[in-house]
Length: 247
Image 1 (cartoon, helix red, strand yellow):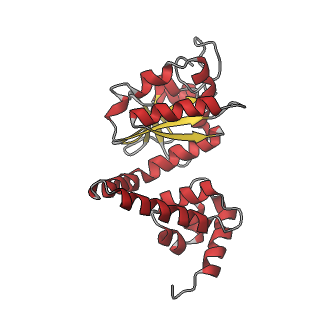
Image 2: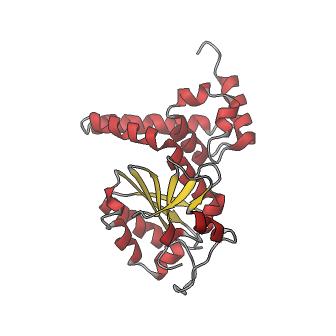
Image 3: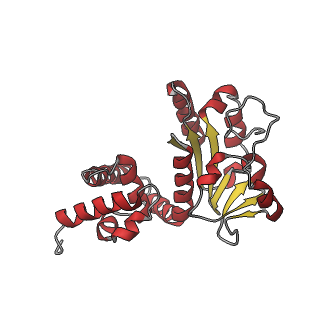
């Protein structure tokens, strides 16, 4: 693809497309479209294999600055590590772009498709730190799609959390306490069979609090991106074994 950051080919003049992308191009809408849909930068992302796995939210093509617009204040730029290694200047043009920076929540979604990613990861960490962007690293295109869906379905909750942080007046002790509480919650959830740290982080992000996770039904847990029915059953059983009805 031309300057997508999402393709590994060195030939920038080639654009890969889904077999069904021609029909999507005619309508300009994939997965139903309509208000509230995930908006995708068509010029940069048409042909990105990640889109094949975006199944739980509607998406539509749009003329936007970032690669994915998960809400009015949430923009995502997608970048594969291999592409960054071949075109190291590309990430600067994206995260410094005026259209990309109009969002309150800015995420660089990095696809780690290298055997030795340490140097690239360190560089992207520093770039995002300096430019006030959040870096999220994934290791498969399926995982990238899950995060995009997660950003879209929970973007309103995420904004609420950020507003509370601002209301604290920048009290670092409050931030430290919040971080410790979150780490404790993650440690508790990962005690359940097959629940990883990533799963626990997604669950807390999806439900907002550990209490909300603990009182959620098995079905509600299973629809959290990346969890599924098997992990949901294990976690629900674990929570109802550990937590008595009176707690």
